[in-house]
Length: 197
Image (tube, rainbow, N blue to C red):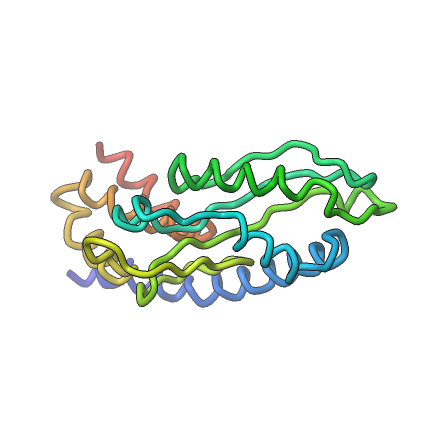
């Protein structure tokens, strides 16, 4: 039991470091959007909320997490490659792809290719759900259907099952990774579990 507590403590200790890293990263992304997107990061966020639907089915199934829009906008303002890192589900990914295409024509030109690449973390979550996830944009939606598990519930589930039922523990750690793909301790714990299977 002491061993389980120490893993939980390590995850929680790293949370402060991860949160600090996320805040710095989000600040950099907002600065880049302020420079490149017409109207700045505020306009980007407004356009996001006008065009991206966090649908009822996703909310009912507790499809929550941090998905990352990774894309290129060339210095002449034309759209380049687009991909989704850490997808939540197919519907949300399709909404983000549609939104990216709708930004066409809304980009300022630049002189330096360092300003062409974007990684924008977007959190989709349910109001009242406790999670460490942080995004440049956070889409809070009303509860629908069954109550969703908070991060602490998933930590408890992981610690309860990691020694005896690694598949159940793996489900919990995968859900934590879906919510915060930047937490390296979650990745390490998943690797340990996969070795047991």
